[in-house]
Each structure stands twice: as C-alpha cells, then as structure tokens.
Length: 317
Ligand SMILES: [Cu+2]
Image (cartoon, rainbow, N blue to C red; front, side, top):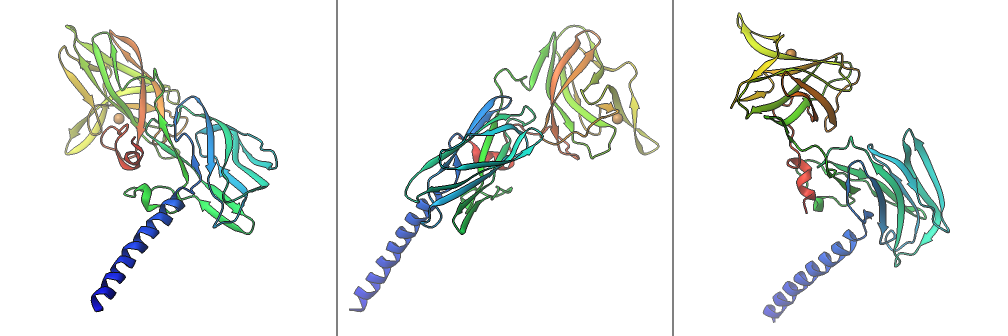
C-alpha cells in the first residue's frame, strides 16, 4: 500500500513537471516578437510584430512599441478597427501605439512598422523594441533586455530583439591598398567635450619599398597626426612624428594604445562605442585610403570584436 502511494506521488510529480513545461512553452510563445529578427544596416526594414496571445486569456486592446535609437523613419501601418497614435522623434516615430481594437486571446495578428536601419548601427549589434501589450485593465510589458551573462531563457518578458547584419559590400575589416594591407581600424570612444581621440590599426607592407603613414582624417576630426609614445625621465610622453610612421617592406606595424597611434584632433562630436566611422588615411606612396573605424570603449586596449563577445552570442543562428 505504502509502495503504491510513493509511486503515485512520484508520477504525479513527473506529471506536474511535464504540465509546467507545457505551460512554460505556451507562455514563451506568447511573447511579442519580430517575425524577422535580423536586418542589414543601411537598408529598409519591415518590422512585423507578432501578437500570438492576449493577456491571461483576455483580448488584446492596445499595443505600444518603442522604436530604438538607430532605427529611423519609423512609419506604422494602419490597421482597420484600430486607432494609430505615435510620438514623433527627429527621425520618424519614437513610439507607435495601436489602440481601440480587440484581438481575442485565441486569435493571432501582426502589427507592422516600416523602418530604416541606420548605418551607425554596427554589425553584430542587437537593438530592442520594448512593447507594452494592453488587455483592457491588464498590461503585459515585453520590455526586458538581455544583460551580459544572461541567456534569452532567463527573461520572462523579453523585448523583441533585432540583430544587425553587415551590409553586402561593406568595407571588410582588412583592406588592401597597393602593397599595403590594413587591418582592424578602430577608435576609442570619447567622453563628451573631449577634443582628441586615439585611432588604431595594423599595417603590413608586402611590397619591396617602404611607405609612410603621414596623416588621417575623420568626418568629425579634420586633423589626425601620427604619434609615438616614449619614456622621458620615467614619464610616458607622446610625440608627433612629423614625417609619419614608416612601414618597411615585409614589416607589420601595429598602432595600439600605449604605442604608435593616430591622434585625431579638434573633434566636433564625441565618438560613441559601437558606431562605425568612415576615415581616410594618407600614405606617402599608397596615397589616400578609405577605411571604416569601429568605435570601441573609452578605455579599450584592443580592437572591439565584430561578432564575438557578450550578448551577441545569444543571437547566433
Ligand atoms: Cu597622441
């Protein structure tokens, strides 16, 4: 008798675990998510938000979507039976709300916003569209954003996320100009009001003659001088190299924090981590070479990673 009792309790336990996971998977499908969770930088993107459920059985009566920075020109698609309202930002809508409709819990619908993905969003970045779903007096907030170290499954109410992909024909991270190969151009982000920024990259000379990196510019910095660091009475000093930096045949020269670097001056705007910034390098022989600098953190010591690191892993396919 006792045996049977234990057996029954055990199977009840298993049954309830099975039931719980059923409820969990049904709930996780109830998230307000994007139909296509990836978009190419610099292109139009049709954001289709799927609403597969109401709130705890109640019909959905309103949906508000916040448009993240870098997603420009947001234009919502009207829906029959719903009233559209939006708050306007400098570049299209900041938030969009459909209200006044009624979407039963057991029906499914889609809410569409036409957008444009800015080129300032770096490939590998993730942007979030927090959503608030209203069902009469109840609301469900789909606003949680993945923090470092978290997995998607840790979030009970995740915001819809969009993964940014590199544009086809985007400058690759390795550029060849004549006999020079230039790799991983990057900048350090700057605090507001800073007038100078460090630029870094590596240059390999595969030719038979030496070349010199003489100067560089950014759209926000008209002057970029080449500096070296040296010890002077136990103090680290920066000196400008008036003739630029020589890259001898067969040599690779690495510009990095604490060593050779480009010092961009007279910054008109701060550099923000994650941005991609077009720049021009001037070499004595190879001439002007356009590169795209990726902006890393303020104190970063090494080139920022493209697709690796942090939360980007969670969105690998
Ligand atoms: Cu310097």
